[in-house]
Image (cartoon, rainbow, N blue to C red; front, side, top):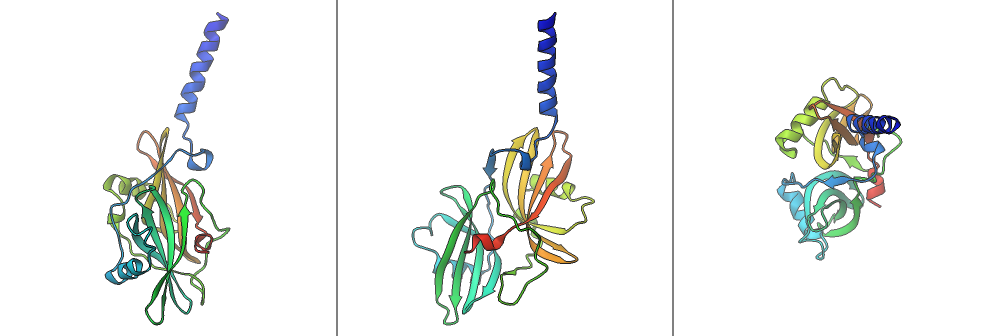
Length: 220
């Protein structure tokens, strides 16, 4: 009889563990990098990227969007890229001098399981600093099913107006965790945010985390 009780308790524990969602903040690893199939660069931005990209990287890096700019003896561009060879995200910088010469700057991995966050969002662009671009709401940034998850999660969410830039990755739990890079605009904030959304097995979605990305940590 005692053995049956032990078996019953073990089964209950398994049921409870699978019924309770494991959010991204509590899980270790398990993130799968999402592949992107789009690029939102203008013709001029792509030309700058192609001029400045290191020849060892040009066949592997696909630029997605310009996240920010900075005036530094010309203009520094901050690109979000996907490394199609290594299957990872990267943040790449290049400087276009006043004479229009483009030089390669920095290249840092955006590890989706190990994001660098800021303590608080920036209140806006400051002279001499990184200027976050006002990226338009682009539905094509997300596949239809992912966009539906994101839209449902934001129903009733009022902290920031969030515009998705890219789905960085997913994590299978009791349901699915999604990690998005978004532009967030609030009454006293304009910044890039990492937004985690949990979609349960019944299709109910909610925002579980919304933290400002420390962009400066990826451009030095």
